[in-house]
Image (cartoon, rainbow, N blue to C red; front, side):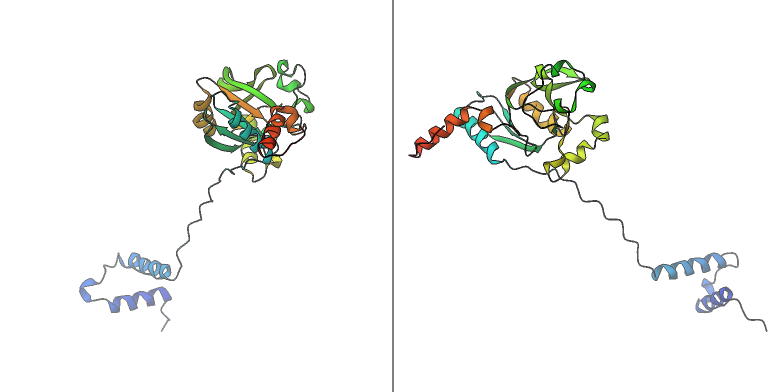
Length: 256
């Protein structure tokens, strides 16, 4: 007698265990057998784990440096912002600290700044095309600026910080941003790779439209850009006077 194939032997065992009225028709038997085998095999396999979703990328929250704290304290103490919103940009830390007209903090955000260190704009840089700028001319100048929204660039109005030298606060540009990985640079945990612009200050688009634009839209505001090569007091001379006044208030006579 020939041996029964394993598939038929399994089918015979299934049929013998089933009640007579539940026996399948001859045409349905192969399909039932296949279903039983698939179910048995499925029981022995562990369910596939779903791939874990990537953790959300969070924008680093900057902390004011000692120099930024001095500038903020001076502006608040002397009301140098004249009731307008103001931003302090710390180039060393590549960060922006935003306040309303009453001095209440609104936000802190990493920024992208000019590729080249330096605190002065090159003469005539505002009249040059981007392609004509040399590497040393791609600086973000330091100082105190009255910033206002003005003529559109690439179809969008920008917050001009220094119109004459073409320095503005605006969102990360699309094509250049993708090519130069500007978004990734802004999200990195350190400011080491945040120097990438031609001199303008780049911020995330959502931050620009949701925070910067509402704050400065009506009357503009002041932007204080801290130096990265000059002494802080050379850019903001009032800090020297402030240091003397603070020292006298504490009973200490200090040299300016």
